[in-house]
Every structure is written in structure tokens, then in C-alpha cells.
Image 1 (cartoon, rainbow, N blue to C red):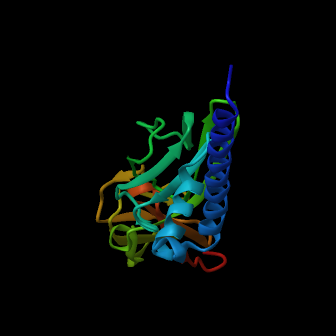
Image 2: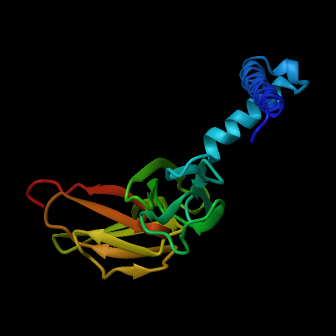
Length: 228
């Protein structure tokens, strides 16, 4: 049979445990609102809270997504960096090789024009999140095609017909063409001459095409007097 003294001892122990638990709850709430009372640096408390907000939970999150350069010179490579959390699948548009879920990863890209990149991460629950930005790409001015001159080098009459020797010079040209067509497309010609004999006033358009499809044009009008 249980004695009254034992029951009294058991009640006192229970009350003591309840008092300690209640005190712990009170202090825990107090410390959360008064971090200085714990002796912790308030900045450290803030960082801890920020860390918990970023990495806590099971939701899919994009931690980072950026390019190493904000403005790229055409033809130059750079790296595209990203980080995802709680993702079962990840993709980048336009497609980039070597992309898979990771907290931190960089992949190489070399766009030839300004491009919007979009990162999409899909979580285990099927929910997805996306981020995007535009990487600006500028042409390398030193490699752009240029026409340095396009002019009449000589003029003579052959009977009643006017004959003109036209000459041109260019820089950074991979192809040279003329309209109206007088010669077939030239490849890598830094200069040249050709003969034309228009029957009426005609405007010739010289076009040079350089790297990455950049073009330069210059027009030259040959005047033929009426009745010639």
C-alpha cells in the first residue's frame, strides 16, 4: 500500500518539474525577443535567422543565378552560375550543357547576341520556381567590317558607251558583293577593281560581310547624261 508520505514526495517532484518547464518556456520566448540577454551578438542572431529562412524547409528555392560578366564582348566566353535547393530537376533556357541540381555550379556559355537566360527548378512536390536575366552582348568594334573607299578610278568612252573603272577597299571582310551584280561574291578580298558600263544612271551598292554576319554598305551613283 502506498503511503501518504510517498504521495506527497511525488507531488512535490511533479510540481518542481512543471515549474522548471514553465520557466524554460518563458526564458526561451524572452531570449527570442531579447537576444542581448543571451550574450549573443544581435548581428549573429540576424544572420542565423536569415540562414534559417534561406535554407530551412523543404520548398524548392533558387539561391543564386547570374553571369560572371554583366556585358560580354561578342565571341568571348563567360560562365553562368546558379544554385538551387530541394530541387529534383533544373533547366536553363536557352539550353546550356552540364546543368543539373546543385547548391552551387557554373557552366560556360558564349552567346553571340544579347540573350535572356531563364533558370527553372522543380521540387519533389512538382512545384517549380524560375528566375531570369538578360546578358548584354556587344560587338567587338575592332573586328567589325568596314569599307574604306568605293569610288570611280577611271572613266573612258568606248564608242558611245561610258565605261567606268570602280575600285574599293575594305577591312575585316569575309565576303564582298555588289548590287546590281557585276562580279561573283568575293571571299577575303581587301581591295579590288571592276569595270561597269551602265546605259543609264545607276547606283551600285557594295556590301562587305564580316565575322558573325556583321555587314557594312556603301553606295556609289554613276551619272549617265541623258541621250548618251
